[in-house]
Length: 260
Image 1: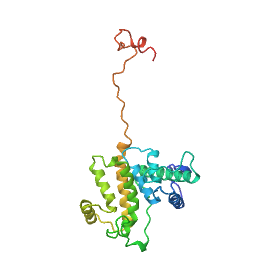
Image 2: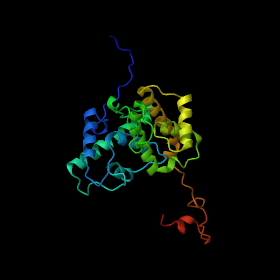
Image 3: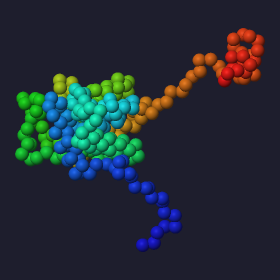
Image 4: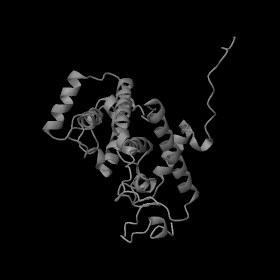
């Protein structure tokens, strides 16, 4: 096959430390998190994936040392000391790679591939674990719920998005949170309205909606996340040949500006 005269330049391959996780590495990370001893309460790999998205779309850049402890324990208690074990170091490496890959994918393509597992057919009639009296969840909701719960957990720890006076952000969060169990009459009414006006029939459609919501939130908060405030001078700049502001009558360069 003949190549065009001016082919687009190919992108260099990503370094191993920047590559997204493979299926085997996701499974490895899930095992590492499951092995964290009590009384710590770690996230699993699916909730972690949603949690990372919730951190990335914040209207502020959040340092790793602020959010990472909540991955290993819901209460933010630290796992590991100054000298981490090989298991702790490996978990941190995998989490950092997934965070970087997700952030890069959202920035470059406006989307990403979320880690969402299809539930087993035997569990189709299972109600929410924290509300055994609630109606059973359909298969699509049960598949999406852990991921969105991880996202909501990050947003509850870092509530800056909730504090924004932005109707677009609020609307997009409502669309995303439709997959969480409704609490109260208002949330139930909103969920029913979404189900009527914007029904989601398949798991693939639900995943597309999750990705679309996260991508929209990323774009909506980006101007705030990367905002750089201009440094304002408290007083006008004094030139070297201008009179010194001290009132001596001498030029600034031979007075208070002499040591500059």
